[in-house]
Amino acid sequence: MSTLMPGKIALCQADSLEPGQMTRFEPAGMDPLLLINDGGTFRLIEDDCTHAIASLAEGRLEGQTIFCPLHGGSFDIVTGKAKSLPCKHPLRTFTVAVDDGVVYLA
Amino acid sequence: MFRASLHFQDGGTVTIDVAPGQTVVEAALEADAPLRSDCMSGDCGSCIARCSAGTLALDPMTTPIVSEDERDEGIYPTCLTRLTSDARFELPYPLASAPDAPGRHRAALVRIDRLAKNVSRLVMRLDDPEGFRFQPGQYLRLRPPGLRVARPFSIASAPGDLPELELLIRHLPGGQVSGWLESEAAAAGAPLTLQGPLGGFALDDRASRAVFVAGGTGLAPMLSIIRAHAGRLPMLLCFGCTRPEELFLHDELEQIAADMPDLEVWIALMEGASGNVRAGTAVALLADDPVADTSYHLCGPPAMVEAAREVLRARGVPSALIRAERFAVGI
Image (cartoon, rainbow over all chains, first blue to last red; front, side):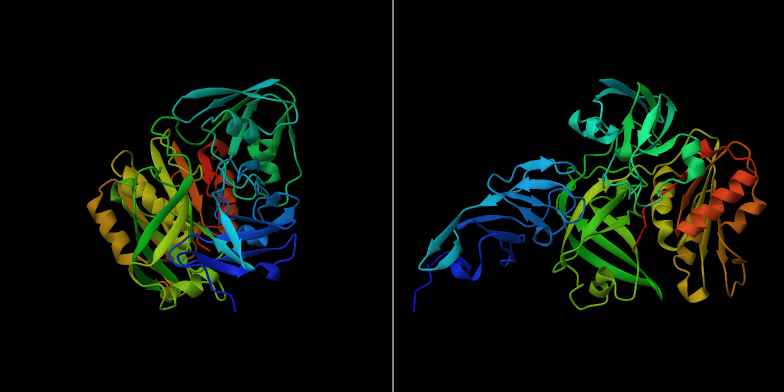
């Protein structure tokens, strides 16, 4: 049995998210987050589209670009940068740590 | 490269470059020009403008956000409009005292008042009203806590009421926001996420008199405009609901009319009218009103807006004096 890292928010088991898959988290007191397995590297971005607060978890992931389900704007999941209109403002990105098979919000 | 000149209701002008293949809204966003837009897919009506010179190509519309008659008169959703020459557009809102660019804001629920069988008033307080300067008639997108969807609602309060904002919300069976409204989670202090201000619906103050035709929660943007601009010009509000148990804010509207000498309020019910409430629709109330030098503002179910437009056209009102909030308000 592993010991969880103190002071960090555990998100999920690393092997529960296949490459290309994503899942949404709503840590207490925080805006919703979207964890993406990007070919074995975990990316953590805010889940709310910066254009019209739609949930990107319900959008489409193509490589390292996520498309909003509402108006089709897109973001780079590595940098958070908006890639196509109507999205203009970047998504916040967060650092993740994987320790003993558990993904944490670092 | 083409040039699009944008002519605002107050005479202000801005000119932008529009690349071949680019939509007018894309060019405006790139130039940070004050052409309002929201969905960029021809669904919301925020970016509608009248083209008074130039030639255009219109992308296919998935929703008929403007009618064929309107297109014949040069009215276009500029998010679906590309230029084939330099062009001139007339915008239905002023350039001066422009609202803040839409952004994400947080608010806390103050209270919910059940106004009628199917309508509630939601009052919230913005955590920080900085950056939320809006023009009466605009809308916002609201996401209650725990929901993944945000829905558009017109603002019913006046800018002077900030940091409080008031919305009128219609209860829809199975609606996510309706479900939240009726739940225990909708308690004072509940954290709300919102986006705004949005939209280009505004008072047309170029005629000497303004008429508002509102159906159901389509009353919201009219209330904001009336509260903010009362006294500037004579106004008439024609407000209609279906049944007595669905009529809301009756007393409050009568009080507003009593307090504002230049405002008249006429109310209609399709069923069960009595007293000073007339029988029929909000649109039917227009039959008793003269049309000279009047601007018309429509907000309500699409069928009501279309019926009002037809009645006004039949009475000879030029389309330039008729404007509508096209978004499905309050759902």
